[in-house]
Image (tube, rainbow, N blue to C red):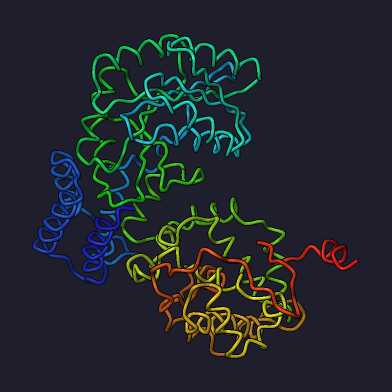
Length: 508
């Protein structure tokens, strides 16, 4: 998200970081470049004008602290100003809570903004936080709206109320509220109808629904792809209905991101959530300071850790680490690491959360299909080959490449990557399940740019070197099953483990 703006602002601030002395002309030039970068990102002109003027005054009157160089102080001012523009350090991300314990959230928005999918995403997020949500569709204008919400809610495991025969949206909303209270839910999420244009008929219907159910929270779902129009839509809904906040969607696309930077300033209402993909777990709370750090290439380690905690099974990760430190680490474990990493989200998002990593990794190396290809290579191997990679001779590698739909060179790169990881882990291991730092590692890590702020994220489960794996998904990748071999006919399972009972039963 914000790739273009982020790259430009990083280039601008990097020029200032090393400066021991900052002149007025330096500040003027930096502000000119920031102004152009924001306007090109589709940020509202009045917002840009005020933002740059305020920042210029702060830069000129700033007292340089002992712990900062003048250049670093200027970068800090830019960071603080960007944080304030997005909502301030604390932000207002928390949903309002009713005194009764029963909360109603109404989602508004234009057609195609992603309201229905967002309703399911938000319900899933609330469920993961220990709440009991229900979703209801009151869209009586789009025939498939109710069914779409039902399918999505079933996928995330939350209750859904729909009434395809009823044409009164207000009645459906009231009936849904009654059903949610009866089932002792503490959150009801109402998915409303959308239009290609916000007309008076739509506004009247939405006002009637709000009056009938008295919502705790009214959130506008805004498509980040529509640029400046997003601000106009937000102001229109705010004037006619009154909003409590926004959910920005499609921030993973080619959107320039200007809407997110403008909407908070012009409406004085917070962005509460952002959606960064089509999957039901591609939603996260919006933290202004974290987002400002991401845009400026400073990373977001806190969000990265939170994603890891939500996506990775701690016990399984511990066992994998023990195998890596021992002698039993094999390609089944590497497959499991790839699978865990895919759960955390796209490679582009993960790299963007790493301090100093944004903009320093080639875009083609962040194609998620690379991971799919590597997993396909492993699934094309037999159990014996995965457990004992040393037996992978030229003929076996050729067969594996054909099964995965890749080149033999791709198989060779994966094996080399595995061997490099296994070798490194053996160097780290002290032979007693402990951990030791190899001689000369600190110097080598410094050369590679793996400084202290990277923590333990540098290797990413063996994904350290993905270059050269290609970007396109080759033909033949559809078949991921391993070919039958005379020494191993047990089918592969996603965890790399076998159902031995079934195998024994088949031999009787």
